View 1 (cartoon, rainbow, N blue to C red):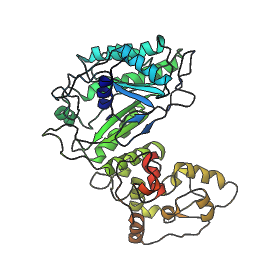
View 2 (tube, rainbow, N blue to C red; view 1 turned 45 degrees about the horizontal axis):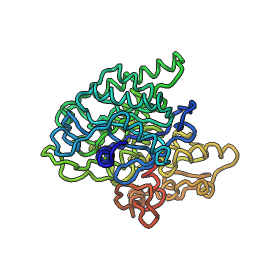
View 3 (cartoon, rainbow, N blue to C red; view 1 turned 30 degrees about the horizontal axis):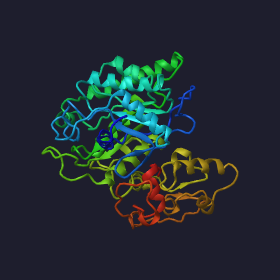
View 4 (cartoon, rainbow, N blue to C red; view 1 turned 90 degrees about the vertical axis):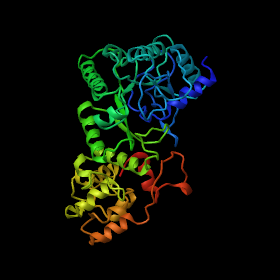
Length: 422
């Protein structure tokens, strides 16, 4: 069994990677233990970045790479430890049987070489599946520069894989992560995308990344504007079919003259998640969400900011407007938009009806009419004032915050910090 001191170091080193989420796997139990399909794995996040319910651990923190922002970088003065595949397997099974976890998030520093590290990760997940009969959820980190045959084989045993882009430009990668390159991160993503498509088309038995791919970007360690981050995000979704792009506000875990001394404000991270949601579910394009300076608005959420820049398109009549138009109304979320489209087939909708549908009327009333009635303001300055009044700056959102400790001005905006829905 892995020692307590080794376990503490390897789990502590893994907590800064937020790109783990378990939804989407279809791996069924084949006669062993665990199940990553029936109900999925819980993926709640604590304020410091730890993902509960998944065992989130590094195989090694002994790294030959020297990424300036990483606490495991080669020249960092920290205790170095590594776990064996058997230790990780035994720990996973033991924690699962104790009902501590429902799945595994396994990453590693680049120990000895990329190929050696990828071989050890592959051996671990293969043992879990074939020798230990573990059918629970497994998220495996890919290692940059590892041979493609190792990556391909690992994808047969993992539910999800991720290559963290970390920094949104080649220039910043060369400066802060000199052993990584754009190609070493994007080429494996493309390889996995192509092979997953081929696997599905040829109708092979078994699994090949049933929960797809994700990635992570650090926000604030380098000088790129929100526009560059959002454009890259849009390209990743459209080109590689990624399930999620995660954003992590920069926290100075190590000191370096090339890095900021202070953490990045969490409000920027929050706005990026909201913009990401709009790209994926609301039909927005990256360019529509940006202010003239190339950043997202900090005063308003991206959907609200877009509506204020395009007041000439409003108000829209909820009983007639297409769903794609309703999705762009502040205060009308995706679920509400489709509820409206269905309900108006049977009766004309009023503001009272919309309130029962949980439309956030204090925002939406400035942008809609219902049965020809309008209860908002026609003065653009007044609308801006009413939409921005009372909003306090949010900090990192906790899944467990109660009403008295809500980080935003009301329940609906607090909820959007967790779900991204606007």
